[in-house]
Image 1 (cartoon, rainbow, N blue to C red):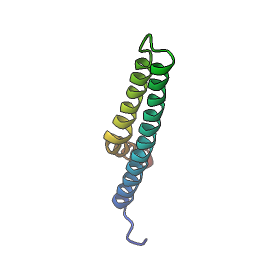
Image 2 (cartoon, one colour; image 1 turned 90 degrees about the vertical axis):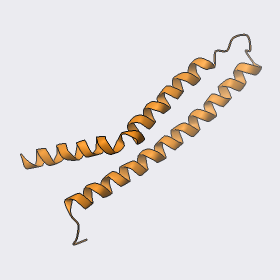
Image 3 (cartoon, rainbow, N blue to C red; image 1 turned 90 degrees about the horizontal axis):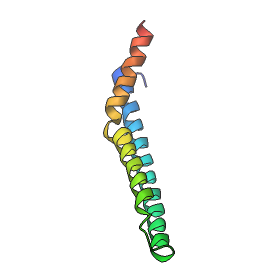
Image 4 (tube, rainbow, N blue to C red; image 1 turned 30 degrees about the vertical axis):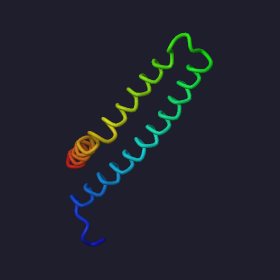
Length: 92
């Protein structure tokens, strides 16, 4: 622990955040897939006159995409900016 530098700390923090973001995204995607499947089955077998399940499935898909975009795709950039803001405030 004596060789701990600020950069190695930042890198470890980013890696931890990226891992948590990916894990959260996978859980979100799996739950969304299960709920979507259930809604489609209900739509097909109970109320098959109108494909209403499309609307919540698309809405949940947008949520999963947003989770990927901000939680996985841009997580490193967001974390780097957050760390820079903390350093800037600490130096002031």
